[in-house]
Amino acid sequence: MLDKGSSGLPRHIAIVMDGNGRWAQLRGLPRMAGHRQGAENMRSIIEECLELGISFLTLYAFSTENWKRPAEEVEYLMSLPGRFYERERHLLHQYQVRVIAIGNLDEIPADTKEVIERMQAETAAYRRLTLLLAFNYGGRAEIAMAAERLAVKWQAGELETITEEDVANSLYTAGFPDPDLLIRCGNEMRLSNFLLWQSAYAELYFSEKLWPDFKGPDLRRAVAVYLQRERRFGGLTLNSASQQEEEV
Ligand code: FPP
Image (cartoon, rainbow, N blue to C red):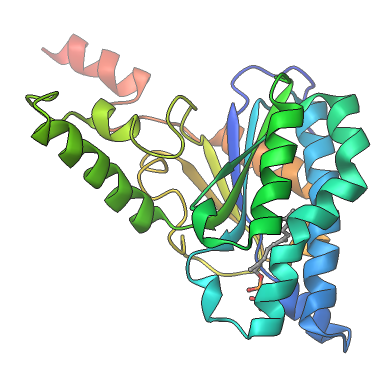
């Protein structure tokens, strides 16, 4: 379906991994079983990204709103980075995947923070794929944080104006490209506070599949749809632009 090495592939794919709870419910299992399966599914998508040659993958693992869930579920979600690293560590090294967390790590349990920092430090040199793990992440909180950072600089007289670039450079994702393709699984059609600034021109793709069932071929399908889309970034298509020139 997709040519390996097709030009125009997305450089950065971001995914809202939704549907773990329903996946478990459909099987009469506790919600935690869905999260476990969901965490295991990360490997298939990482491997598919490597296969396709995608450089950046952002996965929404825990939102600033997820604290509202029952304590037992939150506790389990907080244990996932450690379980993931234990299970996939050798593969991250073998595949040369760099892991970087985006989100407020100061509010999460110390042992979870410690394992995320270890994972970041141990994979810091890799560049084949960068996995941005959105953990205790919220798009609005991120923009508020950027505003605060810029206010401090402004007050110190370091800024005369505030540009889009200044804002982008004050976000967790400073230095990383914006997502080209944003996928949400689980048959819901909203962004849920994910990469609000960065997704301004991302192509959106919604899948009915629940995240634990969203596999490599599903990612390829999303990328194939992306390749059919025409990205104009607010401008005109090449055809209509040249047509206009002819008309002038
Ligand atoms: C949303 O599904 C999913 C989450 C809140 C958690 C997603 C996390 C993972 C898939 C694994 C994270 C892994 C690491 C390594 C941190 P939901 O529970 O809201 O699903 P539902 O809508 O069916 O209830």
